[in-house]
Amino acid sequence: MAKRRELKKAISFLTGELLDELFVKVMLSEKELDENKVGALTGRIISESEALRSRVGKRLDRKDKQAYEKNIKAHFASIRSDWDKLVGDAWAEIEAL
Image 1 (tube, rainbow, N blue to C red):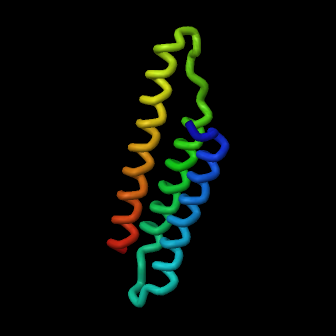
Image 2 (image 1 turned 180 degrees about the vertical axis):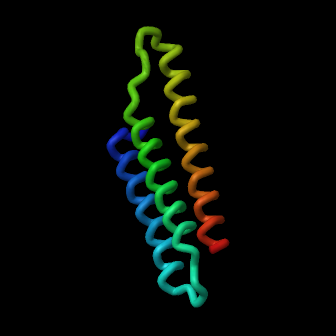
Image 3 (image 1 turned 30 degrees about the vertical axis):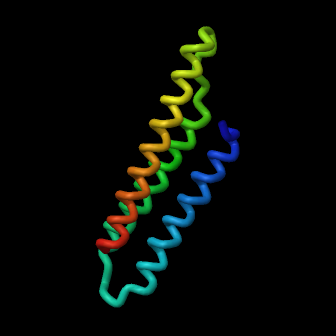
């Protein structure tokens, strides 16, 4: 398993990349974009990525080793699926602007 710190850094980096794409889209757009939509999308990307970063740092109960190993895999699998969903949804919204 990767280090939690590295995973948090990866989430932060990829969040920055998503925001860069959003801002490039805004700057290069020939049509007038709704500032409320852009602001709401920016806020959602930031808040959801911060929520994911806090979930990465969450410590699970280690009393039962077998249960811990099963739970830790499920925990990080859910973080991965939520991250994939966030990126997919955000990317679709950026393209739809």
